[in-house]
Image (cartoon, rainbow, N blue to C red; front, side, top):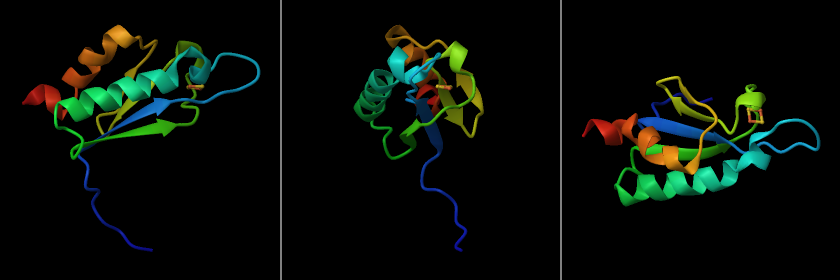
Length: 96
Ligand code: FES
Protein backbone atom coordinates (compact mmCIF):
# COMPACT_ATOMS: atom_id res chain seq x y z
CA UNK A 1 0.00 0.00 0.00
CA UNK A 2 1.03 3.57 -0.68
CA UNK A 3 -0.40 6.63 1.11
CA UNK A 4 -0.29 10.10 -0.41
CA UNK A 5 -2.26 13.34 -0.68
CA UNK A 6 -4.49 13.63 -3.75
CA UNK A 7 -3.63 16.08 -6.49
CA UNK A 8 -7.16 17.51 -6.53
CA UNK A 9 -8.59 19.97 -4.00
CA UNK A 10 -12.19 18.84 -4.38
CA UNK A 11 -14.21 16.05 -5.90
CA UNK A 12 -17.67 16.30 -7.38
CA UNK A 13 -19.29 12.88 -7.28
CA UNK A 14 -22.30 12.63 -9.53
CA UNK A 15 -24.58 9.67 -9.02
CA UNK A 16 -25.38 7.88 -12.25
CA UNK A 17 -26.67 4.73 -10.67
CA UNK A 18 -29.28 2.89 -12.72
CA UNK A 19 -31.66 0.23 -11.57
CA UNK A 20 -34.60 -1.59 -13.06
CA UNK A 21 -37.13 -0.49 -10.45
CA UNK A 22 -37.44 2.39 -8.06
CA UNK A 23 -35.93 5.84 -7.98
CA UNK A 24 -32.42 6.28 -9.33
CA UNK A 25 -30.26 9.19 -10.41
CA UNK A 26 -29.36 7.50 -13.67
CA UNK A 27 -32.96 7.73 -14.82
CA UNK A 28 -33.16 11.36 -13.71
CA UNK A 29 -30.33 12.76 -15.79
CA UNK A 30 -27.26 12.05 -13.65
CA UNK A 31 -25.06 11.43 -16.67
CA UNK A 32 -26.12 14.66 -18.36
CA UNK A 33 -25.47 16.60 -15.13
CA UNK A 34 -21.97 15.16 -14.87
CA UNK A 35 -21.23 16.18 -18.45
CA UNK A 36 -22.48 19.74 -17.81
CA UNK A 37 -20.53 20.02 -14.55
CA UNK A 38 -17.40 18.73 -16.24
CA UNK A 39 -17.79 21.31 -19.01
CA UNK A 40 -18.35 24.12 -16.47
CA UNK A 41 -15.27 23.09 -14.47
CA UNK A 42 -13.11 22.91 -17.58
CA UNK A 43 -14.34 26.24 -18.95
CA UNK A 44 -13.23 27.90 -15.71
CA UNK A 45 -9.82 26.27 -15.81
CA UNK A 46 -10.58 24.37 -12.63
CA UNK A 47 -10.01 20.89 -13.97
CA UNK A 48 -6.64 20.64 -12.22
CA UNK A 49 -8.32 21.39 -8.87
CA UNK A 50 -11.70 19.69 -9.13
CA UNK A 51 -12.18 16.10 -10.18
CA UNK A 52 -15.53 15.12 -11.65
CA UNK A 53 -16.39 11.53 -11.10
CA UNK A 54 -19.43 9.39 -11.69
CA UNK A 55 -20.58 7.56 -8.65
CA UNK A 56 -22.74 4.64 -7.80
CA UNK A 57 -25.68 4.96 -5.45
CA UNK A 58 -25.13 7.50 -2.65
CA UNK A 59 -28.11 6.17 -0.70
CA UNK A 60 -30.42 9.16 -1.07
CA UNK A 61 -32.11 7.91 -4.23
CA UNK A 62 -35.54 9.44 -3.66
CA UNK A 63 -33.94 12.89 -3.57
CA UNK A 64 -31.96 12.55 -6.79
CA UNK A 65 -30.35 13.27 -8.97
CA UNK A 66 -27.61 13.79 -6.41
CA UNK A 67 -24.19 15.42 -6.46
CA UNK A 68 -21.74 15.28 -3.56
CA UNK A 69 -18.89 17.76 -3.10
CA UNK A 70 -15.97 16.32 -1.13
CA UNK A 71 -14.17 16.87 1.14
CA UNK A 72 -16.67 19.64 1.96
CA UNK A 73 -19.37 17.00 2.46
CA UNK A 74 -21.99 19.15 0.73
CA UNK A 75 -24.98 17.44 -0.81
CA UNK A 76 -26.81 18.85 -3.78
CA UNK A 77 -30.12 17.07 -4.13
CA UNK A 78 -32.78 17.17 -6.81
CA UNK A 79 -30.21 18.85 -9.05
CA UNK A 80 -31.36 20.40 -12.31
CA UNK A 81 -29.32 21.85 -15.15
CA UNK A 82 -30.14 25.34 -13.91
CA UNK A 83 -28.26 24.55 -10.67
CA UNK A 84 -24.85 24.03 -12.32
CA UNK A 85 -23.65 27.59 -11.61
CA UNK A 86 -24.69 27.40 -7.97
CA UNK A 87 -22.79 24.15 -7.52
CA UNK A 88 -19.68 25.65 -9.10
CA UNK A 89 -20.03 28.65 -6.76
CA UNK A 90 -19.58 26.29 -3.79
CA UNK A 91 -16.29 24.92 -5.12
CA UNK A 92 -12.82 26.47 -5.08
CA UNK A 93 -13.94 28.14 -8.31
CA UNK A 94 -16.48 30.18 -6.42
CA UNK A 95 -13.91 31.39 -3.95
CA UNK A 96 -11.62 33.01 -6.48
S1 FES B 1 -29.42 6.13 -7.20
FE1 FES B 1 -28.45 8.03 -6.82
S2 FES B 1 -28.40 8.12 -4.67
FE2 FES B 1 -29.18 6.15 -5.06
